[in-house]
Image (cartoon, rainbow over all chains, first blue to last red; front, side, top):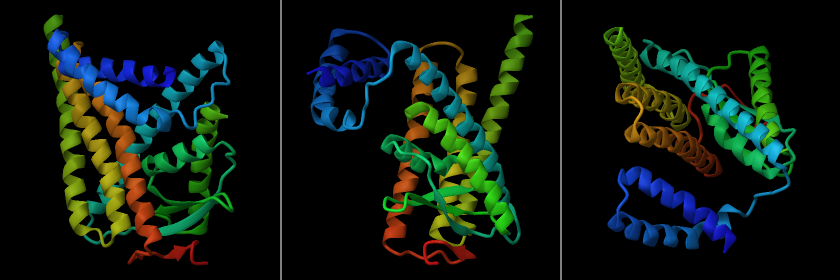
Length: 168
Length: 111
């Protein structure tokens, strides 16, 4: 019941934000839709949640979440500039490479978040995660040498460190 | 003074909008010009994301502080989450179905 309420209240709030007004019609329709959503999603959403942090740590986590989001937005802008430069070149000069990187993450949530958000980092695209060897397989669009690959791996480890701060 | 702030806000908004349009245009060009699925996914993730964030930021600056700007912020957050997840799922699916990249120089999976 608690899980369903935790889904129901934010979705109803979101419903009001998108509706732009608060009246009985919006409330009734919102209640029906949000009840259906919370009944369907409650068990899946809280499957990997671990409530092991105190209130003080919770605020520190929020600071790190903001830090991670701003880092990703910065990275997205930089990498978009690079990719769009390739798009307008007469003969695109990229040199794609698939590289495996061993992860230091233990927490499954950190791995899931990083493997999805690597897509936003500079020139990288997560293709797969090998659960047995704990390796990410990353498709890099612009790696011309092994040295450059090492530099890019260092960049990924910076993101790993930030994501680990949130979940570990 | 208020007029000056308004002009400045408009300049910032239009810079965001023009940047966003450039990135979205480059996504379309890259989709046509890039040789294979994975390189196209790069354009579809990064350029499209940067373009849409810039356009929405421009709208946000033009709109000021009201309920509509809150909606725009929610849209940006949803976009940030859903685009990256969708692109990763497509790349993972393509990799599992052994779709080869045409221009790859080195592949650690096959080594």
